[in-house]
Length: 323
Image 1 (cartoon, rainbow, N blue to C red):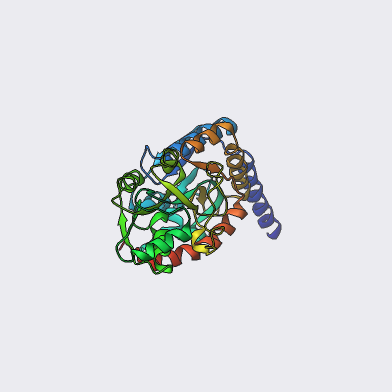
Image 2: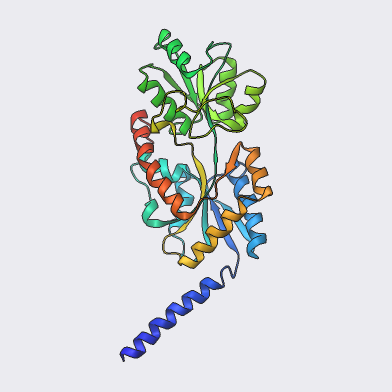
């Protein structure tokens, strides 16, 4: 009887291996937890086209917006762990939502498998040079202290990276600034140019044209690198602000349900890492001021583990709660 049980177990293992070796044998679905038409949707659709050609199967993009990205994320967390339902998302429902909402219908590390970080953007602290006559972060802090309690900073939404870092900058430097949240980055930038708000942190993709025409001035870059488009603008660390709270910049990533067979996860990781380095994907990233990452699953998990506690601190300090 024992040898029959062993043979049955071996057969199951071999059957699973065979299915993994044959993956994909049918169309794959990319679930995007945001509405059609935005940057994440465009990136996911281009990624689907590139990976479909490489993998020999159609890849369908299924937008499931709602609940700040939690609806689509929950859908994937509860999907069959076979590699045919995959999450392509921004970092918000993974990093921010667990600390902003009292009830989150999934546990990222328990219910999802890390595949790869696809791309990341550049966040820039900027001012209207006509209203704020400074050229460096230190000059800005000194100028702001002379106007303590009267200044406002814009963000592209409560709980966004723009809000969290802006709040931290104001609080940690004891500047007593007012937060002005907008329903989108373009609206925030318009009011920065118009002088309704004094400064803000936004994406390079949206702000770059206004740096070029002089309507906005970049003072510092978040994260660890100077973008090629702003070679003379220092990072916050280079400006004398080395705190970890200025490092998270957000990213787009691919995840799958927990317990997907390792061979299937490895195939997904291999294909997405190759796809993000193609000319097609890099051109798509450039449209939105982003650049390719293509991390391994292990690198993705390490970055998530390092960034989550920083995000939690930022959210608690900002008071950005959504319940």
